[in-house]
Length: 399
Length: 204
Image (cartoon, rainbow over the protein chains, first blue to last red):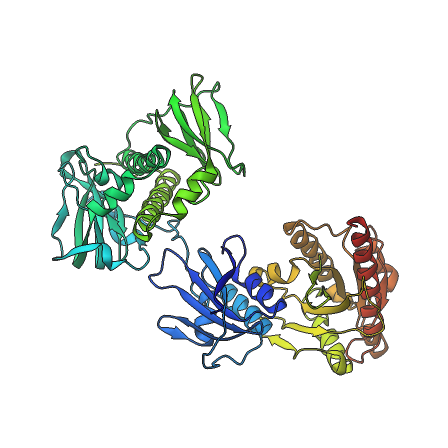
């Protein structure tokens, strides 16, 4: 057997066009497998002597599959050296494919698959009040579910309540079919849709794996008929318990972020007074755009996460004791360091974490826990975009 | 920077023909492809980008000698001029080793030449490259049109417009007839290879 990973990486660092040229230049033979968190199945391209001969990206195959994969702007690729025995469906030359695919991307013929844009999210008028419709939110999806973690399946009818905010419950579901709206209830019985989840997304987060009571912060309702898989929480909890305190802290801090950034979106929506006051004496502990691989956990004091928009600085959330911040190599939450800065109070004290050992622990996690982490990070990044959107468009007046 | 394929002992360098729309970039490449057919190692790829076609082929120039025992192959590209083709432009200009700027000699295209050169500077800067440092050649194309009575710009004017600060070599050409095409390519290759050799010695 001659099967090994010869090349792997991130598509937002090395694009598919470059990968094609590297494999072509080396006359490589094998399978290029591409995965991302927005599609349930991976895409595969088969190379013989540096030239693509066939490909699949369900339901497409052959040259159409290759072209569609050029629309994947984010995700991971892995090249396995292997003898290829598939039918040659592709007759085009390597460079012809690359140049034609890029032209189609620029012409808008190839659909881009990446983080959904909220720039055009309309805030619509309903019953006199401005309101964000779930329909205008991007659907957050996840990769294929590992069925060995599903202990039961349940169906919910359109409009049925799956989770009620404030109630206790330790179930985590994965959406097998259909979609759900996550809503926050506000004073006066009004509710705001904060996220729309689809196939492969999870309902419930790491908090459900703790021994303590876990109260739901949002409500979840079926939009159309939904089919859910109840996860083996005990098995996940066992895995969680085996993690280092640092890694557990990181996961709980992610949960906190999701809650806080959602609170922020709700606050902007209801025109609450800004609760985070930035002062000049705050130091910048992580600069926006910094590439230093540093991760800290707060032992004392407060740090402030600050984003930047066309209309100026947006305070996003506060980080307190036990919260983790920095450049975590395997997380992309649309926050620091790439898209936000971290400011510190005068009394901030932190402990540096070892990013290498965090990465090692992450690599050893089960696929399901990894997917759960990715799902939470995607939700954080979508909620952050919602915050930017609400801030830029001026929060709607509450009636 | 060129690609070094150690396994096959080949240095692959990338030359790009840049210039305003309809200035003759594709005519240049088509002529080279036809004239040098026995030296080309791939079919010519022609992509129908709006306004201009994007062309590409591999080329094995003979008589250039070897660098450090490695054969030198050349990838020739044209770049689509239209703004919206940013992905293609980015890919083509990435790690480019030498540029031929094809300028249109027609008087009416004077402004278009200047705008396109500014675009080139900007696009190179986006790839962290400096137009003043990269091997660059001007080709003043369509010189034959003067004889047909069409108003063309004198060389001195084009030099002043485009090459005043850059001060790089230039060639006159009539790409449709093939005049000056080989000379341009030769000059650009020589410049690119001597630049590469300099870089190699630095890293020794």
